Image (cartoon, rainbow, N blue to C red; front, side, top):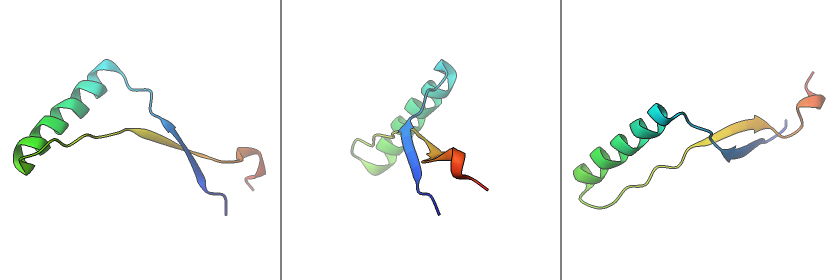
Length: 50
């Protein structure tokens, strides 16, 4: 079974703002800085699906 390959997600400005808002909320709750990183998963070798 192929392992997913991850690349940095290409987010729309609205999506990025949502991530930043969630970072702020989580940081306030935790009492320290929380950073979220967005990745997209893709199949390592899509041609071999079947």
